[in-house]
Image 1 (tube, helix red, strand yellow):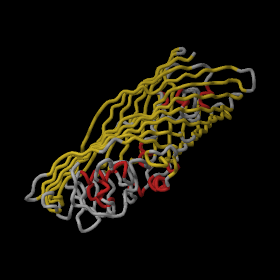
Image 2: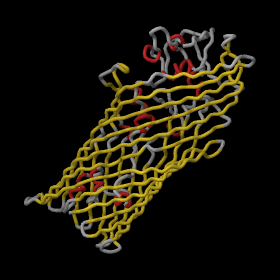
Image 3: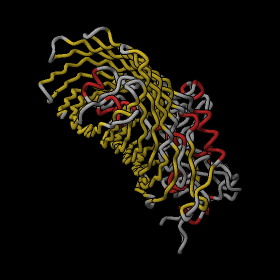
Image 4: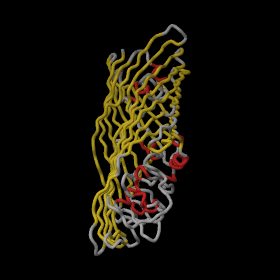
Length: 532
């Protein structure tokens, strides 16, 4: 390991986040609310809180299976055509890709009872709740800020000797310095001199340069459901369920800057001087986990043509595992001096945390318009601001998990409740064929302070980039065919969401490269099954 000669001593002052902590951004990223389910469910915009009698009710309102009069077994396939774009000051950077999914499988059994509760139903199912397949890239030139200056300011006061490897000493595990600070210092992204305990980034007032970023996310949230329901006199329907959740999330990010007339380290002269600089930062992050939740629901049918439904989902109590690492390549050329180039990597990290996802509350009503049509509408509230995160009590050795006041404050500052509105219409064209149309709207969970860039955004590990997403709009149409007990349904769904990507948190005159992003999905969904 090379030794640095420009050293200064100071007090420990580090980033707000650590590699061994889950942040509010992580929790937000892995708890999306997407419109997914059977083709009939999607074709009607997911407005099934009061409607029931669909396998997707296993994940939405367990009382919905109380409307079954015969058993049902079915499955759903989904082909998703996705495109994304990132608009910067140099253009619009577009990407397209196609994914295929197995979205849904379920079974509902029915028992007729000779009592006040005329039917008892039970069901088991698998549902893909969310897919993390997303790509973002962009190029900014000229850039108005540098990640190195952001890291330098946050590293001020840290003893630089503690960020250098020594005999039997690993700064990543043996010091309290932030991993991004250590990585940046050993990659010449930040420097300090003999006269003070502050750090400088590469960008100075005369510096010109650019920035390029590329992020690929993938993974899923799956849920396995076990539900029970009952029917009391064809008027009151109750249901309760248990959800077992399986999560996998991967994020791979690349960020680079190149600069002219930067403030670089001249190793031979042991001074900071003008020169050219460039570096690449690679990050890999993996989050996996399992958890469980409870669902409660009722549907009331006071008259034949009207149904009113209510459902409550507890948080999913998640145990999460985090792993990953980072690496850099760099090249710096001081004016009149020799080029310094190389690469540097962090060790891998591996730790656990706890997450309580948001509470969900749903209310819906549906009307039977004669024998031909059904109109249904839902409202759902997802309480993102009530997410709870617990970190290891003793760094990466901790076996207990404790609340962190800073993380709790970040959740409250950055996020608010999201409101979801769903409406769907089904019209029977004949005794066998039905047509459907639906609309689903979800408000952004990010606060105005977050989207306006007023709030400081803390990220875990060595990847300072993040994104906030705006409102989501889903439009859908569908067709269904019934022949005796067999059915097949098809739906087309268009989803649009926009957002803003930030390479890091902007501060004062150090403006982070960013992109106005647009994400569009065209989904073709096919469901088939048998009622018997």
